[in-house]
Image (cartoon, rainbow, N blue to C red; front, top):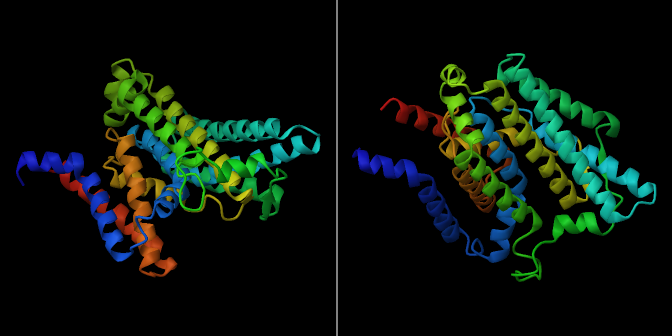
Length: 330
């Protein structure tokens, strides 16, 4: 392939893929381009988007985080327990909701810090360390709830966060086009892009993932950089858990967060990040999330068995990794 054409494909291929998928879906289903459907496609994947943004930071440093789904459910569960305890004590709903958000964010950050310490300081392989987190964090959520559902005691503000959004524009059913989930995703994407592309921390993440030994010799505090990447990922998972629980006004400890790590890794991979580290883009990852969302919507429209959806996502990851390997060998 012509080098210039290859460069353009590398740079804009993911955007072209999204356009093609949207066009195909619009042809297959006339209702696809309905504003309400487009809102739902993004809104339903907003939490995955937050997790994938964090995963991008970790992957760029040369790591992986399999514990993200369990971090989401643990953060959501602890946040709900904290909020319900405040409401039982007579606290106002705004205060209780802020406690839920704060608790979820802190729990998520602590989970990320734990993973970061195990990887960066204890020198455990990221796969092993975060696999332990995947199992442990969910068990911490399952135990107090006895593997059941934890329901919110809030009747107004908390579920309103899950269903509300900006007052304009509104879609046909009178609901906001830009929900709070979507707005938080946009803000997180902008901040993630700034961190990775415009800060010393971001440049150090790329350096660590590209060549950790060289980065260390150049004065980069590699252990700290890795730990910060995991902490930021955990923080985003904590915020995502808060939003997920608000959307349902409850959290199912056995189901919430299941396979989120697969979705996040798939989004990062099809976004062009190198799973060996050193290369990644928050913008492309978000587009990768949208690609997965459109594919999910298309599979439902075509009435493909839901049991095959995981196989499709696995195939996407495999294709993206093989494509990256092919580019690196050129």
